Length: 39
Image 1 (cartoon, rainbow, N blue to C red):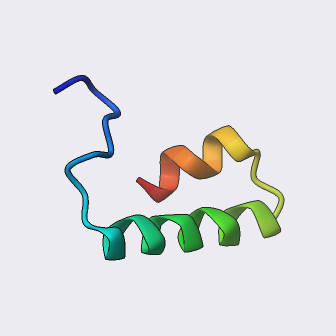
Image 2: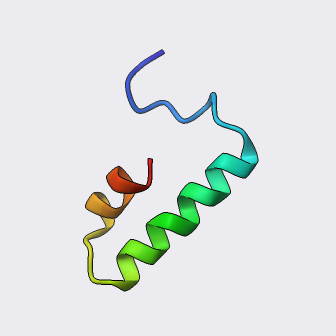
């Protein structure tokens, strides 16, 4: 599995990571950095 493949995560885990990412973005973190931190 290539690094960064999110296919093995459950829907619940994906939703939670998305929510975390949105929280970082609201605080002014760049989209790319927010995605890294969320996962």
